[in-house]
Each structure stands twice: as structure tokens, then as C-alpha cells.
Image 1: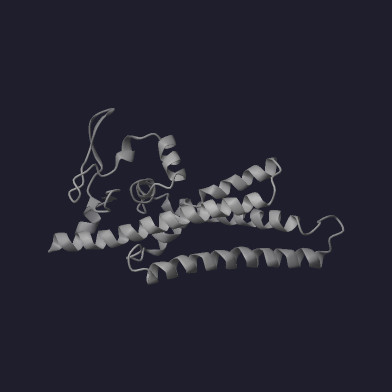
Image 2 (image 1 turned 180 degrees about the vertical axis):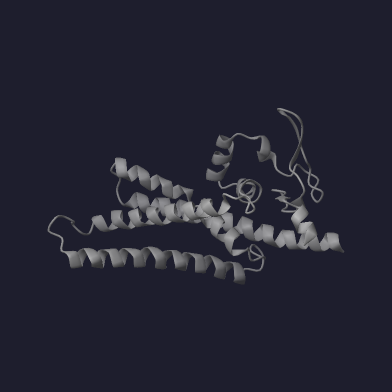
Length: 221
């Protein structure tokens, strides 16, 4: 337990715990630390601009997700819980808007819409959003349990939830549909990008969970 507390960061290459990512000698003069396990720089994204990180996230590079989830967003931070709640609310609101866009093509809403019809639509909307996301999370957890190679470890609930929320950043493109008119088929393209990004992030979290337990065990021996 003491060793896990000392190892506050992770190597984005192998997932091994490291005490610090860099040493600062003077303002603007830093030296990136190497991982004791793989003997390469633990996290090169420390000295990269945010735009480079965003580009690598779009390109689905595993190291970018590992840097963001383990070395940038720390659970010990006082703002962590607030960030988690904000991401969850934003995620659900975008899903609600997605549902409304898809339903607007099938139903015509207007002033003549009855109250009972509006209530039924709201109930259907929330059922679709919450049940759909529950099935998505359950499917990812099930795959991690039955897959012996790619997902050898089961991450903590907070790590898993944060990985899903962060990797769903493609949903922000739904906001563009509020300004410009796009066919509803664009939503399914966005869904594919979100699903592929979710898969990459979840694999990274599971990989790190497995490597971390193995690494600590080897050192203790």
C-alpha cells in the first residue's frame, strides 16, 4: 500500500508506477524521467502542447489516453469529483439531444402536441438514454471479464467511468447540428467514432490495471 502511494504516476509505455515524471532545474528547463521497468521516457506528453495531445487522442493513440487518465487527471485532486459530475451531466445532455434529433425526423412537434404525448415522449427519452448507457457499460465490463488477453485486469469503477466519459469527446460534434443542418445519418457516424474511442480508452485502463498489479508484485518479491 505504501509503495502504491509513492508511485503517483504511470509510465505511458508499460504502465509501471513512477514517482515523478520530470525534474525541473529552472523555469523552462526540465528533464523527463525514465521508467525503471522499460528504460524509456515515462511520459513524453509532459512537454507537449495541448493541441498535440488532442490530435493524438483523435488518432486513438493509447499513450495519449494513458497520459490523460493517469498522469493528468488525478483522483486525489480536489476538483476530480466536480469534473466527474460535470462530464457525466454533459454526456447525458448530449445523449438527450441525440435522441431528440433522431425522434424529430419521425414526429412533428408543435403547439398542438398534447400534454400526455409530451410526458410519454419524455419518459421514452429518459428510458432510452439511461438504459442505452447502462447496456453500453455492462457490455464493456462483460468483455473485460471474458477476454483473457487484451483486458486482463478489471479497473476501478471511477477509472472505468472516467475513461468512458473522456473518450466520448466526439459527442461534442452533436453541438454543430444545433447550428448547421446535417442528415441524421451523421449521428451514427459520430456514434462509431465514440465507440472506437471508448474501446481504446477502456483497453488502456484495463491494461494499466493489470500491469500495475504485476509490477508491484515483482518489486515486492
